[in-house]
Amino acid sequence: MRLLLAAATGAVVFASGTATALATQSALSKTAAAACALTTTDVSDIKFEEAYVPLKDDITVGFEATIKAPYKLANGALVKDVTGIKADFQRPGETGWNEAIVAQIDNPPATTTPPAEVKVKGNFKITKDNKDGKWQLRLAVTRDGAAAKDSCQEVAVDPQVKYVSSAVTDPVVVTPGQDTRVAVKATVLGASSVSARLFSNDGNDSVDLTLEKGNSANTWYQDTWFDSDFTTGNWTLELTAGRGKESVKYERADTFYVQAGKSSTKKSKTKVAFDVSANKVKKGKSIRLFGTAYRGSSAYSGKMVELYYKKKGTSSWKFLSFTKANAKGKFSKTVKPKFDAYWRARLPATSKTYAATSGAEFVDVR
Image 1 (tube, helix red, strand yellow):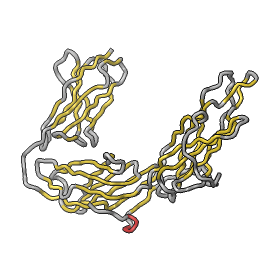
Image 2 (tube, rainbow, N blue to C red; image 1 turned 180 degrees about the horizontal axis):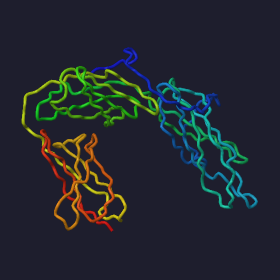
Image 3 (cartoon, helix red, strand yellow; image 1 turned 120 degrees about the vertical axis):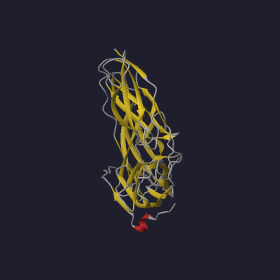
Image 4 (cartoon, rainbow, N blue to C red; image 1 turned 45 degrees about the horizontal axis):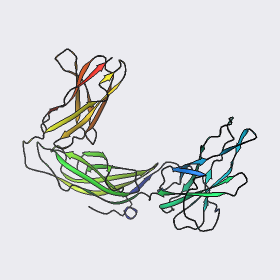
């Protein structure tokens, strides 16, 4: 495992889209913030879009607030009871507030029954220089003839994407007739996606992986398999971490060595779990054939799965098509059955694995 100081090595490459910043930064007040809570007679809930500190371009974070009792009945017609809404936000460590954008209540609907609530939308801006942590959004709701009341809700702003560490199985010992598990692990702050590329320094071999989140929000992992056909020698792990429209690449997150092991004729056992999304279906409608392929007790990543059907009243199975298992060994295929039939999946044998066939599922076409 090695720690990478990306800024120092020059290994970081930014790739960003554009983000429209709609919120302004003028201060509404310099008073210290009170306890952050909703005034539920005015605002029952505030929902936020994904909030994080960007790598480069400013982002605009949208929110949707539920405003209670926005209208009232006067002289037989609805009129606005909520006559104004102001929004501002506060960053960690600040005492002043910054102006946010928020929509106003629409004109009353043409009815005498007032809706219990309405939704209004707004937004505020986050820049690359801002701090992550718990921000606060405050809405000041003014009702006809009354002073404004504040409602406040916290929003968690995730940190800027930052590489911490990574590791790959080292050494990777490849043996004829066997597949060798290669584990990739990474710790990356603030990312919503992490992908990896493992490539040989001495040949053309490479493997692309999409990492999955571990038990911690900042840990990512994925397994792959090497066989004796892979190039031996020095290999490099390259990571790309993304959030929103931006991504950052760590070109030498780790290095590892692939070496040849002793020959063996041992083959791995496989199995396949299989199911259908519906056992009864109208003619012309679709169903999904799906399942999971296993090599031993682990997911059989990238395995080509054969799908078969046997028409009711016949004794022979007919090949339908191939489908490929993903990194978790899961596969899926959508079909439109034309007649009553049994369906099953099969994993063909290789020089390193035994074949496996699932149980059959009957589908009644009506």
